[in-house]
Length: 274
Image 1 (cartoon, one colour):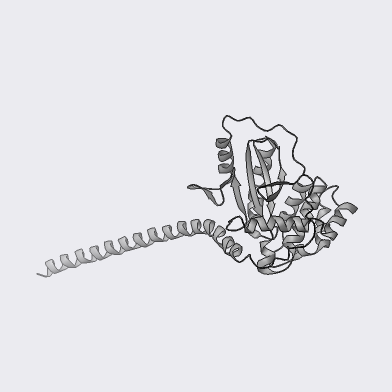
Image 2 (tube, rainbow, N blue to C red; image 1 turned 90 degrees about the vertical axis):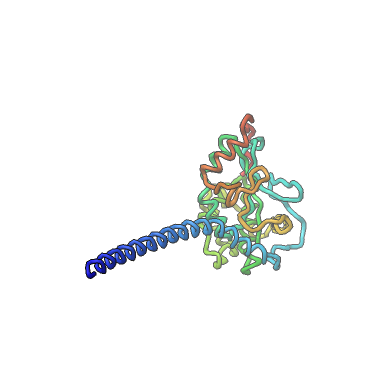
C-alpha cells in the first residue's frame, strides 16, 4: 500500500513539475508576444502621437502673418499646396514630405532617410517636394517652426535649400527649446553651409520675407487632412509609417520607388534649385 502511495506521489510530483514547465513556457511565449507588440506599437505610436499634436494644431501658431505672399525662388504650388522642390524636375516619382523643423519625429525621419532620398534624387529616380508646417508653434508656443521655415525658404533663394534643410535637422534643439525662434541662431547655423551666410540671406531671415508664404503652406497642411508631421507620400500614397503591410525603411523606399518607376526613364533635367 505504501509503495502504491509512493508511486502516486511521484506521478503527482512529475505532473506538477510538467504543469509548472508548461506555465513557464506559456508565460515566456506571452512575454515574447508583448515585446514584439510593443515594438510594433512603438513604430505606429510615433504617427499616433504626432497625430495628437496635429489635432490640437488649430491654435494660433503665430504664422498667420498679414502681408503679401512672397514665394521663394523656384517654389511650386499645386492645388494650393506651396512646396520647395528638390531633385530632377522630370524624375518619374515624387516624394511629398510635410515637415516642421521643430518636430522631433521629422528629424528622426530625415536623419534615417536623408542619404536614401539624396541617392534616389541623384539617379533621377525621385524628386521631392517639401511642404513646411508650423504646428509645433501652435501647440507648444514660440516661433521656431515659423522662423526656421522662413530661413529655409531664404536658403532656397540662395540655391542652398537642401544643405541648410539638412543642417537644421542635424542641429535640431529639443522640442521644448524654441532655439530656432531666434534669428541669430538660424544665421549661426547658416555658417555651416558654404556661401549661405550673406547680407541677402541675413536680411531675408531678419525681415521674415517668406513668413506669409510659410503661413500659406501651414494652412494647406491644416486643411489637408494629415494626421501629423512628418506626413510622407510617394506619388500621392501615404508611406509613413508604412505602405500596405510593409513598414517604411530605406530598403523598402528604394523598392517602392523602383516598382513605381518600372518601365519609366529616369529624370535627366537639371536639378531643381536648392
